Image (cartoon, rainbow, N blue to C red; front, side, top):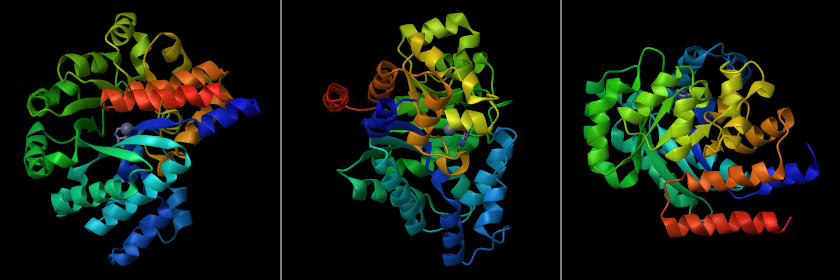
Length: 336
Ligand code: ADE
Ligand code: ZN
């Protein structure tokens, strides 16, 4: 990759739209929080924990990700985790981020919903105006729709603190339509709705994320190119994909980054974006993802600019704010 492209990728203003805040917990912070909360981890050192990050698929990752999240107990823990991510994102010139959180992972352990939402939200306020952040509450798809309804009920007293609803965790065997009724309720309540689909699951899951959940964005979605009709639908309806290349590599959705279809998605006219997913587990934050893709594929400056623009086009922002960010991207590239 040439120096101009590297500089552009690292410094261009960008939005991050697919980041699980629990996936930003670095091993050092996991150990610090465990110590603070007198929680015994099944690992004796940071190095030993990091060595366990050898995933063969999504489930093998989720097992370790949920174990890591179990150190989070107090509102301050959620605040500290979120501030650490926001500072790291800011260093990558992220101007706006939409953060996923998984309340069921915590409420099932007896952590109050208030601690989860207030801790994460307070960190988002503290980071302004350097970086703006909105929250998206995700339902865990390996649990029941009834559990999702119960979680929604517990979260509604804090409804001003999150803007959207997502769907994550183990995809295969848990198709979007399992959550059709709770998503209809969320949409009626005025929340934005997104869903993970087409990561490990087949293109049919992307179709049902659109048909049954009315998803406004699809998280991952990289298997859409297997279905030309679906590809055209994503283009025509301007449904963005939040793609996470290093995640796809580490979870073996792709064998090799040279095989990644991110630039094909872009060239097909899809509003594709690049994101980090779970940066502490997959070897990199958002800029590491941009650099890894540019190292593996031949990305042009024009494609880099399109990716930066897409991140704001796909964001849940007021149009005036969106336009300001798009102008910033254009000015950045004009100044190169
Ligand atoms: N939860 C955290 N990261 C995830 C991913 N990549 N897919 C599904 N659920 C997740
Ligand atoms: Zn994800």
